[in-house]
Amino acid sequence: MTKPVTLLLHVCCAPCMTVVLKALSLEGFGVTAFFYNPNIHPWKERQRRLETLTEYSSSEGIPLVTVEAYPLEENIRMLLEAENRCHACFEDRLSATAEKANEMGIHAFSTTLSVSPYQNQEQIERAGEKAALKAGVEFVYRDYRNLYKDSVRISRENGMYRQPYCGCVFSERDRYLKMKSPGMI
Picture 1 (tube, rainbow, N blue to C red):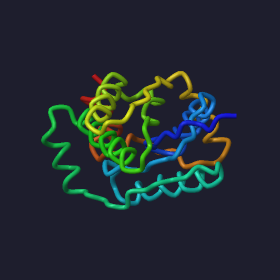
Picture 2: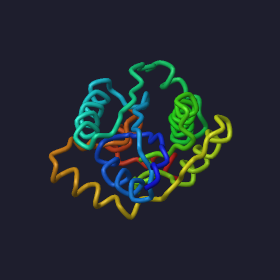
Picture 3: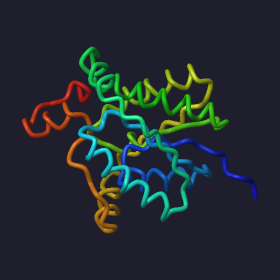
């Protein structure tokens, strides 16, 4: 039996990780989870998502690497200055993941963002490919939107915290004002 290829998985939240972890495992990847999400506002929301992810990762025996820094000012500045804030956010998070994979000697990375029907998958794929090229690692992109309803069901069955918005303060505003995010275009 061959050892699985290790992959660093950028994780936005535990509910999304449920189905992506299973799918990648079925492909033969050994997954290490990576939580880098400076976009999640407010801090208490970020902590709630991280706590749920920590519990889930532990229950599944998945190693979890967490970036504790919370660069609020830098993140908001980046989002305000970006032509497309969602794309800039994808680039930031996937670049950090690719760099961490390289630093850890892991030759491939992916993201749970690919399960969301609310995210622009072309932007995610472009951001991942750009990060991969820069860091010298492989970006494993899979469109898992067909598994989204399963992730909702699994997370509800397991009593996981499910967040009501993507993460940034702008996505929270857009949700409540029923606005379409520029990243969704």
